[in-house]
Image (cartoon, rainbow, N blue to C red; front, side, top):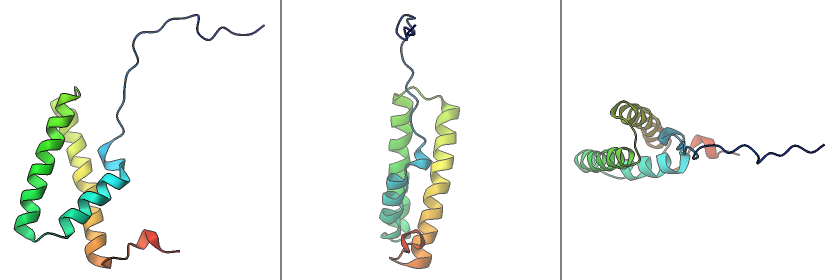
Length: 97
């Protein structure tokens, strides 16, 4: 007997976005953009970048608490990546063979 996997109807699907801090390409690109700027330009870039991230997260229905948590973890991930870039220059230690 074959199971009928589509017999039971479910409600609408829930979309769960991938956490910002785990988006390696996004984190790396942001870190590179920050590392290439001087302090003041980097601060301005970061302020605008985070403002846009917050707006995007709110637009997709995230609560204020969820937005704050996402930005906190994303900030930590970008900070680690900037530190690596500034410590190792162009060669990222994860790129080693």
